[in-house]
Length: 179
Image 1 (spheres, rainbow, N blue to C red):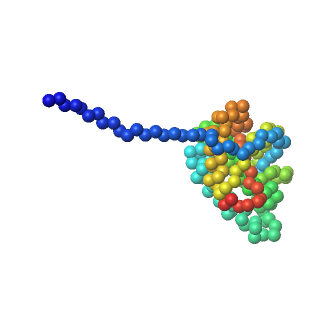
Image 2 (cartoon, rainbow, N blue to C red; image 1 turned 135 degrees about the vertical axis):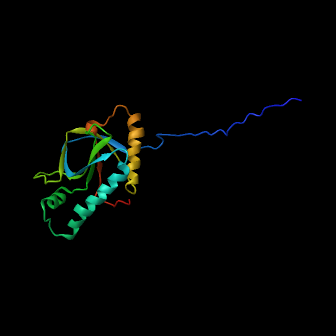
Image 3 (cartoon, helix red, strand yellow; image 1 turned 90 degrees about the vertical axis):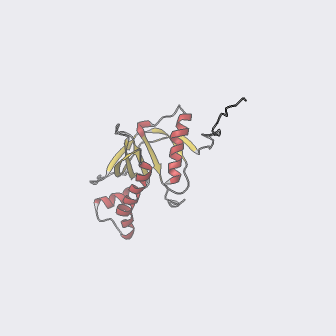
């Protein structure tokens, strides 16, 4: 009597991952240098997608929303928030150089004058910028575009690199954070 051994195989799983299939809406253009002023915190790349939206909420509640109830600012910080339109930009600055940390500013375009205590100034030189369009509910839409830039667009376009370790988010006055 002849016995055969049965070989057991686990089911075969095939996973296909397609990257770069979505066309990104962007332009590349030279821009004059400018400065931004704002509130700064240090973040870890490990949890920045969770922590930066909390920072925005904190700054909005403590620094920006109270101004809507006033006819004019009462303090130097309030005057700076008003004058420089703090909240127009989010600025990531990767210049710390250790522990996966970076600086982030909730900022506005600096138009001159004193920099109040508790605020930071950051200068950007004349530079060529790749500008990506981002539309949709925040923060998910922005985080999705950022992930595509760093995981797909930059590796697929080796002629470009992050200059000064800096990238900027610009928020238009139109619409809201839900669109």
